[in-house]
Length: 220
Image (cartoon, rainbow, N blue to C red; front, side):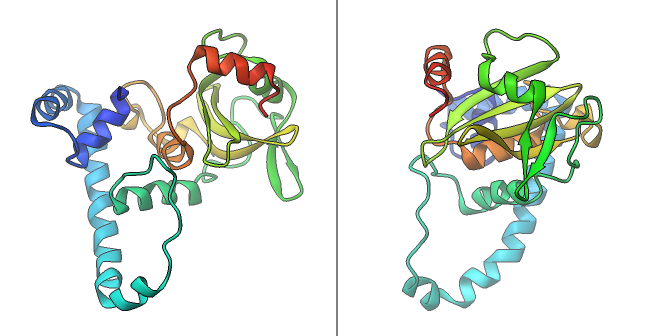
């Protein structure tokens, strides 16, 4: 079953049956924030098509000769939406390397950003279903390689961290000041974070039981 956010993007991409599409369209018409996000997504789609369509049509033989890179098993998105998700990965650090409201939670190690202090502890132990303290865990999921990622928020900012050995490597960090309320998903998720999750997730997010089991196994 699709989440509201998955259904929203599926509606934008024309992937829903007529009855579901009509229901989502009515929800968007009644919500100015969703209307704004839909307009932003359509504009990005147009820009991506304009940028890539000439390349795709100019060299079909070359493309046919090169083996295609494997996509995650659940990736059935139109190519321009996949490109948009990839763009979110490239822009994931626009917000900076520290949370404005809670500095000292991110460190640099070996050219990468990693969670430290209470953020590392929350990613290690906190369940999304049992929030505590100032840090909130959002969604937990596995990537195509089997490693786990978890979204988080603190003091209005948000991010995504993925397990790397004993560390949590920060893959995206977004300042809440950069996105106004009109551009947040109905669930409150920053659309840039939602796109980054969409680019990384393989399968469905972990439910409460799977999340607990992953925690007890040390996220391995």
